[in-house]
Image (cartoon, rainbow, N blue to C red; front, side, top):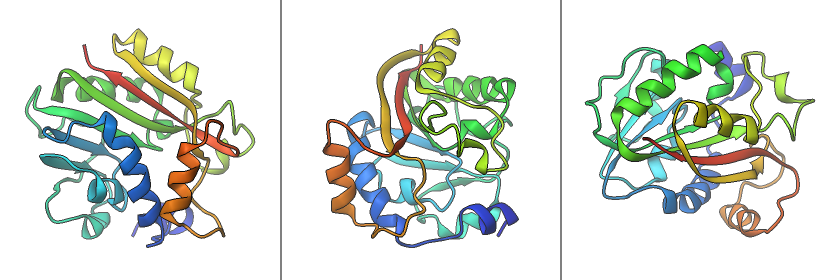
Amino acid sequence: MSAYHQVRLPYDPRRAAVWRAVCSYLQGFLPEQESLLELGAGYGDFSRFVRAREKWALDQNPDLVAHWPPEVHAVTQSATDPLPIPSASLGAVFASNFFEHFTLDECRSVLAEARRVLRPGGRLIVVQPNFRLEPRRYYDDYTHKTPFTDVGFAGFLRSLEWRVVHQEPRFLPFTMKSRLPANGWLVRLYLALPYRPLAGQFLLVAEAP
């Protein structure tokens, strides 16, 4: 296991209940009859619980693949390298807590490749720390390179000709590290609230041109 995951995100099986509830919420934006790719898949919880015809998952740490469900096509490489996926073959690309680890130029490269593998109108679903809501803790992760807000990231995508179709500035708490029980029903209740206290991450959905 990488030093980063040992220090910042050690494996915790309790997160599975959280991701099951999050995937249930996000499924409405994800076409079940099409294929999808998860960028920065980590321990593979999103890929485990989301429904799709075919699943791809990418992470540059090969040690994490052992946690992934067997039906996932594993890609272990840098996200800035060309993907081994045919053009216009996916219905969705998902990324959680991902783009802040890259420079703007690297983000442009990743997004260009995501656009290539998505069919026209395919969706990019991003869950991202919101610098506007959590500026004091944003750089507690020593690998964060670029601060994004919900408004700023949406503008960044529009500048690259993506069509933003859905935004939630307050989506989830800033981190899943908590002493509170990781109960799925609590997450579902939280996501059903009209105003989400302690939120520090945004949700954004955009469509490829």
